[in-house]
Length: 481
Image 1: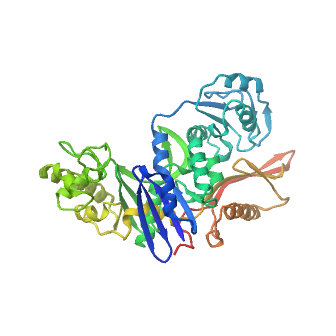
Image 2: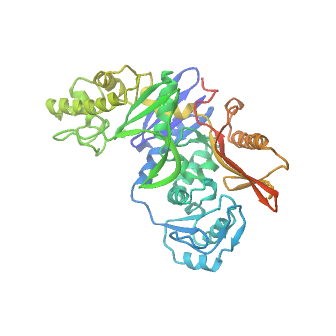
Image 3: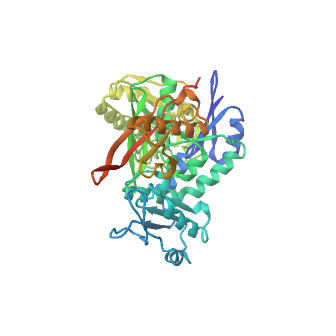
C-alpha cells in the first residue's frame, strides 16, 4: 500500500494506492490526527505539508537572530569572531564569551548560525550551537552546515528559514512518528526525505505542492510531455512537464536567493475560492458559499452556470451575469497564458478540473486530458514519489577526508576521480537505504558541478581537491503500482 497525505490550506487530501486508487478529502478543521486515522497503518506513508509552511515563510516571521562566522575582513550581519579556511582548517577560534554575551537576554524566536566554510568543517557552528542551547530549545536553533552549498548569502537566507520553521516541522514529525515511525516527507523538488533529514534542513519541505501535483498528474495521466494545470483554491499553478519530469529552479524567498531547489511553476492569482464582488478578484476570504463560506466565489459561479458542486442553493445569491463574467474572465486570462506557452497538451488537476479544463483548453486552442482522481493529484504524487538526495561533496586527499553536506567520511587512499564518484555513490545509496529506499530506485545517480585540481608545492602534488554535487534525482518510485 502506498499512502500519500497532502496538507493543503483548507483540506487534507489522502490517496491510498495498491491495485486501485482511493482518495479521501478531510477538512483541516478535523485535524491531522483524524486524517492519519483515515489513512490507516498499512504500507508506506508520505506527507506533504507545503501549504502551512509556505504561509509561515512568506508571512510575518518571528524575530530570527542571525549569527554569522564570515572570517576576517568580510562584512555580514551578525558577524562574530572565528574563521574556517576553504579546506576546513581553523584559522581563528570562536570567542565563546562573545557568543554568550550576544545571547544573554536575546528574545529571538529562532537562532540561525552560519559560517562561511562550515560545510568544510562545521566545528565552529557546533560550538556556537552548544552555547545557544543554554538559552534556547534545540527546535529554535538551525545551523547551515547540513545545507551543503558554498553560496554563503544563500546559505544564510536558507538557515534563517530553517530557524523559523524548525519547531513546527519537529512538532509535526513527532505527531506523525507516533503512529508511522518510518514515514516520509515530500521535498520541494518532488523527492522524499526521512524525518531526521527534514528536521536538520526543514526548508526541504517548503513549496512542495507544485512537485506533488506534477508527479501525481503524470502518474495518473501517463502523459510525459504536457502542461499541468492545477486549479487550487487560491491560485492556479502551471507546471511544464518534459519527458515525464518537471523543471527545477532555485527559489528566491522574500527577494533573497536560497539553496532550495523547487519545481518551476507559474502561479496565477485566481482559484476556485477567488471572491466575486463586482468582478473576479485576486484574493480569497474563505471557502466558497457552496462549502459554507460567506462570499461568492468562482466555484459558486460554476454552480450558477449549471454545475453541481457542494450546496448549490447557497450559490444562488450570485447574479447570473456576474457569474458568467467572472467565469469567462478566468478562462480568458488563463487561456491566453496557456496559448502563449504552446504546450502539446494540458492535463488538469484539482477539484475543479473536470468543470473548467474543457473550456480552458478550447480557449487556449490545445488538447486536454483530465485523469480520474485529478482532484487528489497532490496526494497521489506524494504517495508514488521516491526518496531523493542531493549532496555537496568535497574530497581532500591530503587530509584523507570526504565531506558530504558538512559531515566527514573517511577517504580511502589512492582513489582515482572515477573511483571517488563510485565510492561516494555507494555512500549516497546507503543514506537512501537508511530512509527506506528500495534497491530499484537507486540505480541511477546524477552528478553535476564537478571540479577538481591539484595542490602543488615545491614541484610536487600535495593534494587532490575535488568538489561535486551528487545524488538520486526525484521521480516516481519503481515500486509504484
